[in-house]
Length: 69
Image (tube, rainbow, N blue to C red):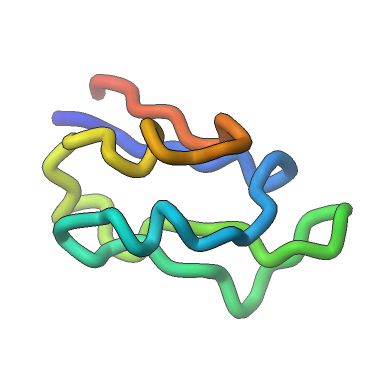
């Protein structure tokens, strides 16, 4: 199984990962804010992730990593 990890400090809330996720399980946090003042992206339901890596591929800030569990 693949696991998605977001680097909250690198994320600039651009939302590109949100738009490309085929399962629609990535969102912009409403409760977290990084030190730069951005609300980082986060995975809403890891169990629904298919490990396609679209999110990591399109992230302009390299803030998303896909790892195997």
